[in-house]
Length: 352
Ligand code: MN
Image (cartoon, rainbow, N blue to C red; front, side, top):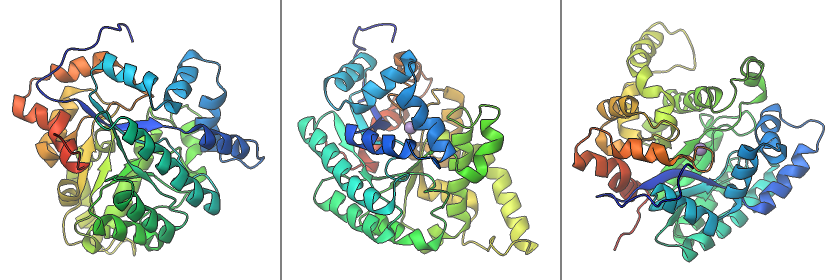
């Protein structure tokens, strides 16, 4: 932050849709996992870094992550963020053993719901689930919607190297579709079998690896036929769609070519083209990508009703990026969709 002057109001609410928190109790669980001799290298590289680094950036992020009150609200005011849509930070419960993950997802959801009750005009929550136990995750989605008033689910990409394209996880998709709530597929650190050639050059994190792995996960879900099975299911992906809109043309061409040549058992015919699912089953946020050409290109590909604003607080907390987004050469109507009304619709945010 270069200024503490509150940003002036805009002719729209600024709703940031991929904002993170970390309860202190979760960090205690993480410390125990990090102390084990066989700790996952991606988790070690991500939370192991943030939780132990003396750097000002890491210390600041850890402080902001744990706050669901004055620190966060002050930063929101300074950046002009009217509302945050908040989710348990990556990797959430997905790095834990099954029993701990199921139990702690409930604790985290209760804590977030309580923060939303304290600040109902500023915070909206997403439901954390443990994919390690798909039946329990489905029940937690139901509890989150019906008891806690939350209308979206957060899943931090792969779960210990396993992907939601595996039908053993599809109770989660069935529950999300039945309760009409989207799943935000957020990045995780790279799985063990993938991280090597990213980490040895320092490109495993948000700089590149996260986008590659989460984009791969979204594509695996598409090519596995999940949206033919669950046609109303909606996913949200950040970071300008993890570059998938830019890939759309080649994905369509090569998916069709691969199906026609019977090259892989796992690439079966789909009812639609890969890009059709991007347009009909995905919302895309610009988290971490405050870049007008990429936003407009994505609006062109998936439509102005499917692209939303996100800051990625506290990892990328930058008020000047909000100004850049305010200043985009875009009609007032479309800009309001981007900042406000698409998010209100997707997360069922009640306005007075
Ligand atoms: Mn994020």
